[in-house]
Amino acid sequence: MSVTPDDIRAAAARIAGHVAQTPMVEDQVLSARLGHPVWLKCEHRQTTGAFKLRGATNAIRSLDRDRLARGVITASTGNHGRALAHAARALGVRATVCLSRLVPANKIQAIRALGADVRIVGDSQDDAMVEVSRAVAHEGMTAIPPFDHPDVVAGQGTIGLEIGAPEAVLVPLSGGGLAAGIALAIKALSPRTRVIGLTMENGAAMAASIRAGHPVEVVETASLADSLGGGIGLGNRVTFPLCRDLLDQVILLTEVEIAEGIRHLGRAGHVVEGAAAVGTAALLAGKITPRGPVVTILSGANIDPALHARVMAGASEAA
Ligand SMILES: *Cc1c(COP(=O)(O)O)cnc(C)c1O
Image 1 (cartoon, helix red, strand yellow):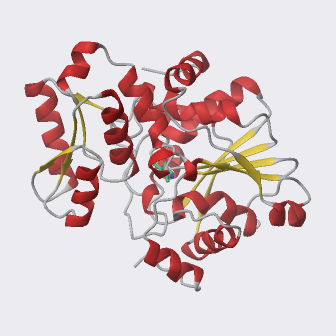
Image 2 (image 1 turned 60 degrees about the vertical axis):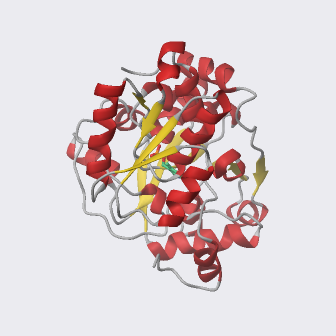
């Protein structure tokens, strides 16, 4: 069930030409302030607006013809759902996204616009997950989860092959697919590079799980970093052990700090969602002291434009 650096190299070959090659640009303001170069890995400019396309593309393109013919399914409404819909359409494969009755109509429309079938089931995310299991058992569909899957981790890890060997890499952390993949790639290439996971204070499931020594659930509240919400799964098999063993540190950010990160990046022309601003936020807040070049992963751009405007004007509340 685990992932190796070779799996990440294989993923890079498999997804080449099907995902965008994103640039690294220097944050000149932070470089000057901190005395070491700060580089931004621009996955907010990835197709579908987030790095999730890498994992989804690698996972789908690893399936055999028989499985492709029966289609793929997920319960994610966020960046993973968008990515899976896009990656499936590019291959002419049917993607199904299961949603609860509570998901707003505009979100349903957006998923349909990407060519996915939408199934509305029950009143909660848990009900949507039950439908995924049912479709896997009875319709032969293949579930592609958002993080806890070796092919998804390997796909996200391809970012690690594109950022060289800095002193530290700052990675947004939720379910841990991105952090596990990047840490695996980086530690194989450059064992002394620090890989630091960053997340919000309210609902840091991976941080709490690492502290407890096993996956735990935490109480969530609304956050500017909504893409970092959700648990890691009590039955987590892939990303928990990798994050526990490979991350040098996990740092938590307040909403005010995340808002500062969004504003700093926004002033440089980078419109990012809160999840993508956590590395910048940690540098601005002095929670990380660079000892050499730093790379921070701008993981996604999918923020409601009205919310972005409110944060740029000084707000630090999600709702
Ligand atoms: C999914 C996501 C993350 C977190 O990735 P995990 O693999 O779940 O840790 C961070 N930022 C954005 C924009 C995301 O969509």
